[in-house]
Length: 456
Ligand SMILES: Cc1cc2nc3c(=O)[nH]c(=O)nc-3n(C[C@H](O)[C@H](O)[C@H](O)COP(=O)(O)OP(=O)(O)OC[C@H]3O[C@@H](n4cnc5c(N)ncnc54)[C@H](O)[C@@H]3O)c2cc1C
Image 1 (tube, rainbow, N blue to C red):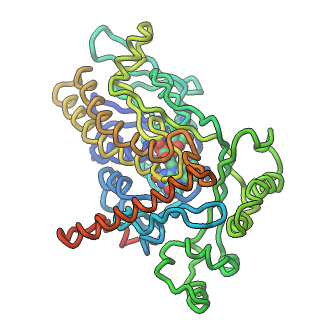
Image 2: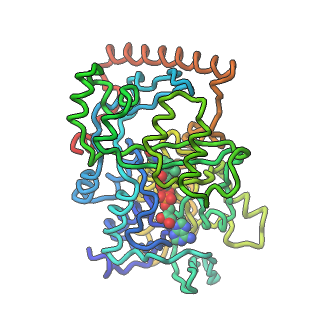
Image 3: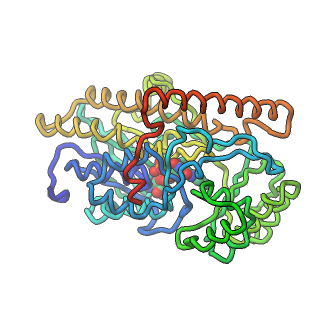
């Protein structure tokens, strides 16, 4: 079906053409649902091009929304998913001693690297090509246009004074979500204690060959490699610099970050980062030196607090004169509702999985609208409740596992912290044993096979 000629009494507007919004828009277009996306940035903007890792939830999102051809084109941008265990995180103390090694966990989820900017463009371009995406259109506010029946519309206003109307407004506008605020949830806040520093650069062969062998151990797949001198040299020869990059992130207590560091020279910023880890291991310092000179992204991370299942009813009763508050025609997805800290690498994965739950519910509403000419508010309310009943517990489990609103939930320099990591390592041993034992008797694979990973 040509999406431009589609006439439906049911229209969806999505704010934000990030990973969540652009992915869902593809699914809606594929299903012939009238959708329009508004994105504040320009087309092909090169912002936020850091590497993220996708695991099963994101792949399920891609499968549910993309055509097989589009999925295959996206998969081509995946980095190699070799040596799954080599990509699992290891927790090290600042002297580089190993605290916990998740690569030993037999059921650790498989994942692939991809540049976030490339993925975003691969998802948003087809939406743009279909005439369903306007760039440089910044959402300002929405209002409920009541017509005395339950078939009211949502009118959406943009920075240039223009507007558009829809039956369902979806806020996929990231961790600074205006939609979240205006629907009365207002659940995303800056974390109080830390400022985050992050930088990424290419890792050309010359730089790679000079890296300490201990750091090379942390490269994907390299655990299976020979770590003798000859083995390392062989690894260097097999190294593909076009697929390689290195990223450093450091979270610093707010009170020691100099005022105005965001606007300081890049050299001054890097000197500060180096100073912060002056007493850490030489390997940590070497990692910083490998990236020194790259532009530093300095920001205050934001985290969402978990809404209750009845948050819409609660905000409505708290603020009776505001028809927008808790309105069932306004839905939220991705970081706009469950912004989380990055350490567990689950933000994009959970954001993309939201589309898996949302898409069939929107299809059902569209079917009703097509057969009856409209869709009642009570059906819309039921649908958003069904979506949130799945989305809230799933995604907020990861908000919690990512540290909640604290980057340093356990300080490994303290006795309490050391004890915690000793117990965590022992617990991991027991879990590993249990998985092996279970595997012998059931013969079940420990982690689901993901065909998209082997074709990347
Ligand atoms: C350093 C770092 C590493 C990370 N690594 C991983 C990882 O390995 N794995 C993982 O799963 N996740 C990772 N994440 C998290 C992941 O990047 C986010 O969770 C994900 O991008 C959220 O997708 P989204 O679509 O909800 O929001 P976004 O991708 O932020 O998209 C929101 C979109 O809305 C647009 N927008 C905002 N306001 C407006 C407005 N008023 N009008 C119009 N448009 C608007 C924005 O321009 C943007 O395009 C990482 C994050 C960081 C910071």
